[in-house]
Image 1 (cartoon, one colour):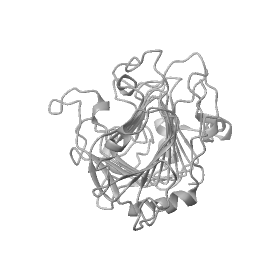
Image 2: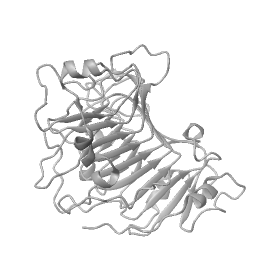
Image 3: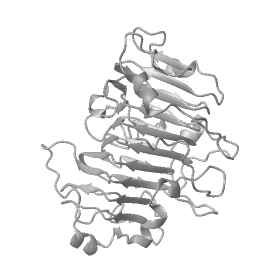
Length: 376
């Protein structure tokens, strides 16, 4: 099934819509709703629920504030969330925070599926969003339709602040069976910050993603471009991906490009303690490419899942390509023999979003990038 893509607003019209004015909607495209304390819609979710369940595009402009709610996108049509800001090219000045406080998976937090904890969920059905357990995770019915064709968020912070340390999965973002682009956005939690589930395609540009334990994980495909990965402490790894057996060659995995990986603040004493990732299963695929690594990174780069359960075999791709900085220790990488140091030929099949994002239900057809805003 090919996804119908509808032309979106230009960068100029986005800036004019986001910029604070006396009449907030004056610079916005048609089909724009307003959310805020003085607006018709007081919550983001109430505005989402007012949208028709069809393929028409809608924009939601969100006024400054803290929105303590869970946002859930199930509609197939394009949705753009804009945070109002005078500085749309600088996430430091984001004025909109979407906040939730929930974790799971421990004796004190209960045994709900990880999906129930997320501040933002993008998936066509509850079943599609569930993580599940075991090597293949939750079984999604074969007749489940693809969800949102073109979700975009600009200048929003998504925060799960259950506790200021890893206390079980506590997601800021969960997306499955959908295409989602995030620009100048922040994602903040400690464990499992971002989940990209089955048939999920997520693109992040100029974002900040903070976590401690396995804070990039999933089954789908994520591309992180020109962003900051902020290490709040060290536990597990930055990435923990679970590959899937398919009858076609798939590109499921997480790809971090031209980014910065560093401790969240200078007061942290974590030199040499943080791993680039560990394999959620032996088909894990993650690549850090052309990225700066500070001294927080372990000399080995990647690590085994555990000493007794390595989850590493010939299918495992835990790799780097031309990383640099004090966290890139060539001697340590070679000695541990866990991290793949890719050459140009090995890296080439994963070197652009066009090569890794695949259309759903097409046996691995590549080039599913019409929903990405490459102007950011």
